[in-house]
Amino acid sequence: MFASIAATAAERATARRGDELIAPADVVMDRAFTLPAPPSQVWPWLTQLGKRRAGWYLPAGLERFLPASKRAAWEIQDRWQHLQVGDTVPDYGGTNETLTLAQIEPPTAIVYTSQRGATSFSWSITLEPTGVGTRVFLRLRMAPVRRRWLAKTAGELIDVLTIAGMATGLRQRLTARSS
Image 1 (cartoon, rainbow, N blue to C red):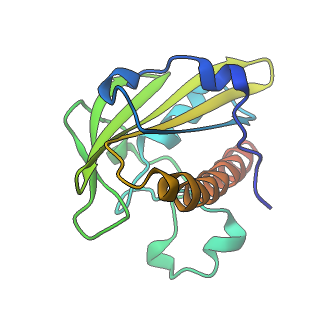
Image 2 (image 1 turned 135 degrees about the horizontal axis):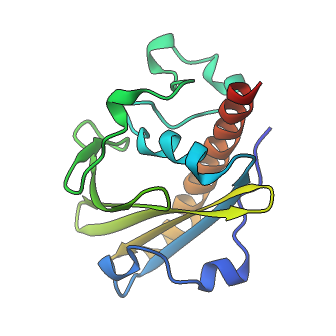
């Protein structure tokens, strides 16, 4: 049901946009997956991510258990396509949690920052064309992290499940759109 989201050793070693925003990082989580569409078709889906926006693109099989008002969008919406540095995007993790757009380079990179308690983090999404579509890289960098073991166990599990679901949901949406 879920897409593979394993980043290779070379992908983990590659510098990404936004790495300098949290340096040094106490915890780094890298994920990557390939989608069957060029970056120009993947990009609009990524610009509309967020709570009270297009959502986080869970697979259809999981979304059917959510109330209709909580399901992610299945189409590109122009109202969410105009991100600018400094924009805030509602996030999960609490009622008032947000992501702030720190960098944007269409159609290859989006970098968000946020603060959760004493911990700052950056979340970058970068796109690279491949022979069969687009490789999507996601990197989460956090510091300071007091309980690194907790971030590296429970945090990793949550990140894996969230990104695997998003990868599968994006693939379904791209496939449905091209059918």
